[in-house]
Length: 79
Image 1: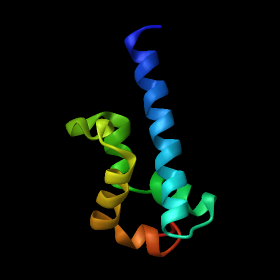
Image 2: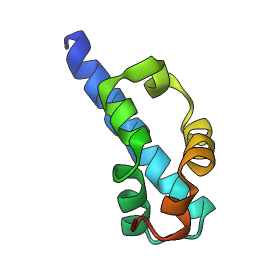
Image 3: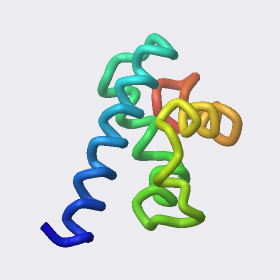
Image 4: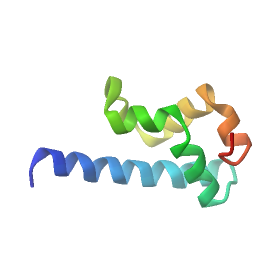
């Protein structure tokens, strides 16, 4: 496997863990947690690999999302 494939697998697993954690932590339906994550600016930064944010722990990323975009978590991902 080349580096890009490994990076893609890592990112996919990170997103899965983060979405499940958001669902559990904020007592959200899994689909609502997916919507919240994929509608966030954080998702774009992780996808683009900006600032190395994709290497942070998923719990830290959940805290960042809560701090920077709380409306996504408290409206079920709908803005």
